[in-house]
Amino acid sequence: MAFLSERSYEGAILIDHRASPGTAAVPEGTIFESAIRVCNHCQRNVIVNPNRTVPLDKCPKCQMFMCRGCAAVYHRTLECFTIAELLDACEAGHLERVLAKRSLL
Image 1 (tube, rainbow, N blue to C red):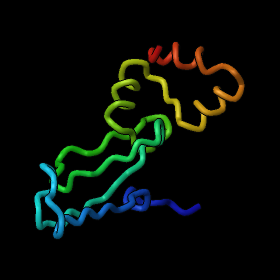
Image 2 (cartoon, rainbow, N blue to C red):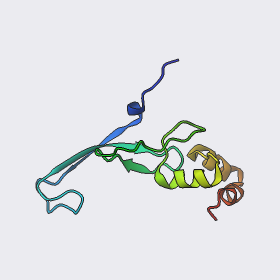
Image 3 (cartoon, helix red, strand yellow):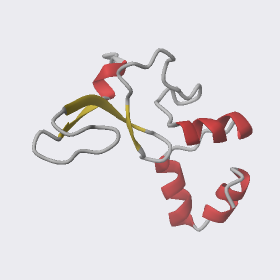
């Protein structure tokens, strides 16, 4: 069994503002390039700050990346719900029970 590195789960984002007015995050005339990760629990895309010194949140149960929102829910409930499990619960008609257990309703 091959072990994948943390970086193998990353994508990339490139924002080119060389010919546009820019934004507060990426000023006019600059290019921003960074890694991007997908939360295994909600499928939210998270741009990884290249200057980040604190490690990214990782679920202790499924060992996958978690966004800050899902990490906060995990630390409150100690329950790991991946997006696949939530979709399965929705198909089975148990979504309200799962979300209530997760304190989201």
